[in-house]
Amino acid sequence: MTDRIEVRDLRVTGVHGVLPEERERAQPFSLDIVAWVDTEAAQQSDDLADTVDYGALAQTAADVVGGRSYRLLEALAGRLASALLIVDPRLEAVEVTVRKLRPPLALDVGSTGVRVRRAR
Image (tube, rainbow, N blue to C red; front, side, top):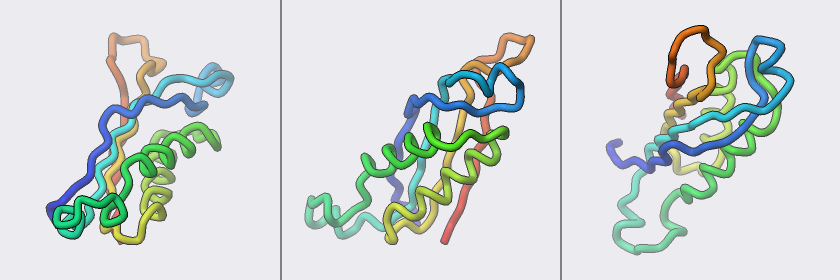
């Protein structure tokens, strides 16, 4: 499948990390979501009911990041992918990139991140 819906650079806050200071307060994350879905019906009808609502994808992702705390970005990204596949049964696969925008490193790093892909 080559049709995709994309949500890029969704900014959300959550409490995720291993270090004590990361577990005490929310920090910013950036998410990219790629959802593979057949968009042929939507192309023909121009009707939202015939495709996956990207607003629902974004809201689901924001709810996951703002919900339960995870120590590892790998665990958070995996949970995001699983939650996104539930949004709509027409989704064939999803890819999620999670970036920590203020990683606790002693080096000048713009972000750290994890990308996972899950398919039905």
